[in-house]
Length: 585
Image (cartoon, rainbow, N blue to C red; front, side, top):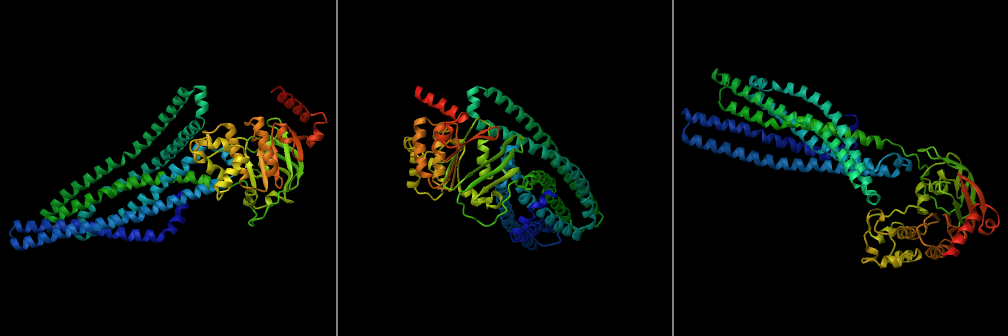
């Protein structure tokens, strides 16, 4: 139960609701337990009438009274049982809500490296399937535990007050049940963990398949993926069956022990009645009802134990992530305005997940309002520089300065809110085009959205759709072409009007004519903003104040367009090659 201690703060938060729920539960069970006594009284009245001990009028009056009490007790018990469920089950939904938000918020602060080392399907399973298991502990398991304890306590008190010896005989099977539950619970916990891990694997495979469905169809490997998914499903099915086999032992065991208890009541109670130890025949009927009323609580002991064990396994998986500390820590609480001066001093960086050295002693400086272009071959470290400016990673050596302060000294939210970032792989959400652009500025007007789209040269494409800006995109923006997705991403960045703009090869899927028009617009829009453009094209870099060329994480050339085309090296070769390709077109 150690893992489930994490929920204690939520139980404390909703303690008043729970206390009310407990009181309602006790009242409901007390009224439920009135029924056996009134049934016993009614049988005694019938027995007395048959033996001629009472008159017909007395018999009729007392029988009607007992029946009225039985009906009244049932109605009141039913009402309070309804209120009990409304109180305690609602608390479990509140706890589920809080726990999901806690997990989601923790996911948000974890570093990028965390997501590289964990699969999306597993993360989704923990916030949905695992939280669902925990909710069953916080709601039904808790409710039925209170229900069972209350019912047993009140019932046994009633039974002992009526026939102490018969009560002891009736309860003989319960210790046997307790021992069986203990051993089965340990096995359930073990198999529940295995099942949850299997579900995570299955969810991850399905998620990756759906995300990469275009690749799967392009290569015609649907039969292969179907076969692999079927294998995983069969494996998961077998693990679920293994768990169910253990859980299935509870109810047959419960029925057997309750049946034995009924036989004991009938035999021992009958012998005691014949020997005069029990005065009324109705007591036997009363005890049979008590035993059968305890049937469901005894059954729930096994079921609740199963729920607790599954919740323990799920909460342990949740706690693994909640205990994961973010590698990027926000040590500055005060929000600070960002001007946009950027400086790298002998920066070296190794990716922690691959141990690839991406940057080696990189140094450059950029004043607010200036533009830097970064060129180089694939894998030379261009995108890494942008990641470090957004502080998606912390550097190993050297220092990254923003406005003269080391980047770790700045408030993380202030830094990132001041940045407009267009990634190389444009990511769009399954929402309208308008909302995807407004993601950069939630309170933007329709006019601002249209203006940003025009500057990104995507407005004409958008109005060409049947629903225009209200067109809902497929997952990851699959409705749009590669170039359209990049331009919508550019619109999303520029509508934010940030102090720092980072463009990571975001025009690679755009034709040269459209690229030139976008670049002209960007020159106007970024004249007062610090801008860094990563590109493979000289056309994207030629208007920049500063240009650096990277190779294997090192700066091999630096200058501006005019100076670099006049010296032998990578930049001049690239310029000559792209110029000749343009002339051929």
